[in-house]
Image 1: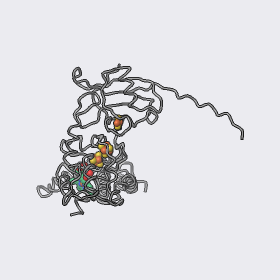
Image 2: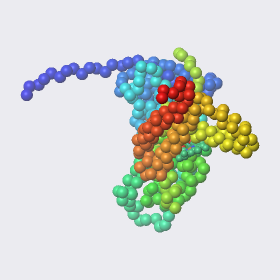
Image 3: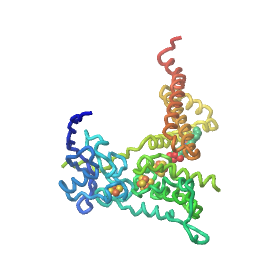
Length: 247
Length: 132
Ligand code: HEM
Ligand code: SF4
Ligand code: SF4
Ligand code: FES
């Protein structure tokens, strides 16, 4: 075999991409408004990179939350082209750049500034379902063992990063200040179906209330929005089924 | 820098969101039909003549079209209602919600195409003359 000269790999080219961002600075703006920014980006760049470029090179007042940049901290949920996404997991090549890409804050939580919302109501619902291990009886002297099958029962819910993409994509959550929202139900599901936990009855009782699972209208927006691929509507359905068939 | 409108964009939900919107719209529409229907039927006890008059006023092409719309709305609401029941109660329901959406769309079309034909047949014949 003789070595063959490989075709040179074309260097990636940056193209100008326009972003239409819904801005709101409470100190100066009475109302949110849209502004457009054009920045050069590579197809493999993330929307988060674009926002950082805008903030660093065009307009330093642009505000948004981000931490890890790798889809694990759950900070940068926002509405990109009308759908809830993590800016750090959305690549330019997956968007239609022939028209401006819209970026706005997630819906249904109080808008504080630009892309930042008050997450407190979201976490309040999360805390309400007691998302921690509840046990009774004697403290065991060794680990609480669990079979692989039992572990698999609640595996999906353990992947949640509490980004609120699901809850703020839910039409019921937008219009109804009461509903716990899908993320809190996913968190409850994760413990309800954990064989080591004994707080299932309490949590089911909470989710049976009028703010609970019966508000869900199975629109699947939450499932489509989850950046972790969690089958959110299915997790809610499992709780509904447990409420009907288990007791 | 362009300053555009202040309102946010419409959330771009998937089939699930739009089937739900349609479900609510058809549910409310059918409710109002039933309300009117109960009222016009109750009229027979008030005055049979007035009842006949109201029912006669329904025999127009527009009302005929509305009837097709009503059948379409009831069929959609019923089929999608069954889909929602399956999503909630059948353990595999949430995984097959998309397939079920296409299934109800297919059954709906299958019933509505001949249904519309037979429901409008009389009106069309009355308006443009019968060919037979
Ligand atoms: C043909 C038999 C029917 C079936 C199988 C059916 C089924 C359903 C189901 C399962 C729901 C709950 C939807 C959800 O949770 O998202 C629902 C909602 C609803 N139905 Fe029906 N229904 C029927 C007839 C009717 C009739 C006759 C009316 C009007 C009087 C009606 C009005 C409504 C309304 C207003 C809603 C609320 C929609 C919402 O919450 O989004 N339905 N129906
Ligand atoms: S499936 Fe239920 S919880 Fe999820 S977005 Fe729809 S209504 Fe909300
Ligand atoms: S379930 Fe998914 S979308 Fe919802 S908070 Fe958790 S990771 Fe985010
Ligand atoms: S920055 Fe952490 S999830 Fe996107």
